[in-house]
Length: 107
Length: 125
Image (cartoon, rainbow over all chains, first blue to last red; front, side, top):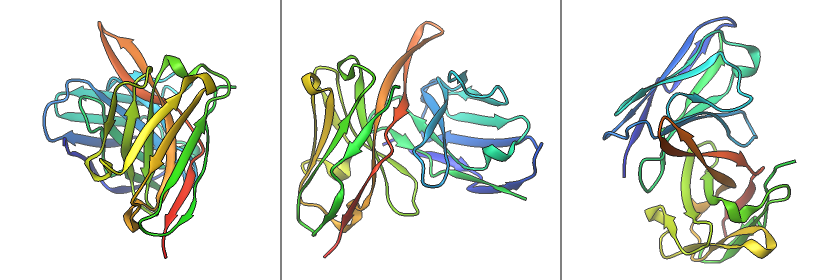
């Protein structure tokens, strides 16, 4: 199975900060990667698909980049509603695998 | 409104069985691959299984192969996860999700665009 490794596991940031989360795949996965946001007690929400395409309705402060093995999720200006846990997911092959998550907390 | 609604979770003893259901009011389930994802208490997300539109192709994570079966009834617009030989490590919130195809840059990609609210499965004596 492809291993997805996110870094950092957690981070503290302030409102308005630029935040970057990385995800590394144990083998090349082209651009077959999505990013999901999860708030406590809630279902995950799709933010980005195909590594860099913004899901409809998602604010433009979210962006994704990368291909092959290295990917990045960037929040350009952190807002109060963005404090959550973020997961990457590879859809290159089976089994699908998630990263371990990155918790974004308030500084 | 496009949504997914899970049901069937509960407390079950180790070695027991449980069947989860996922209804899809608001859209035609038969058009999409469908997926189950779980989350153990305080842990991250784990993909469990998925099923093709016609029900003839399924995939599973290794830890549930031979114990879990994903199925669907398109006439009832519903998805199911039959779980047998349950273990303590199967304790989790189970989510169903719609697996949508996106066409981007001359290729197709998939992603889970609609999620249910989750149903809790607890395996304990």
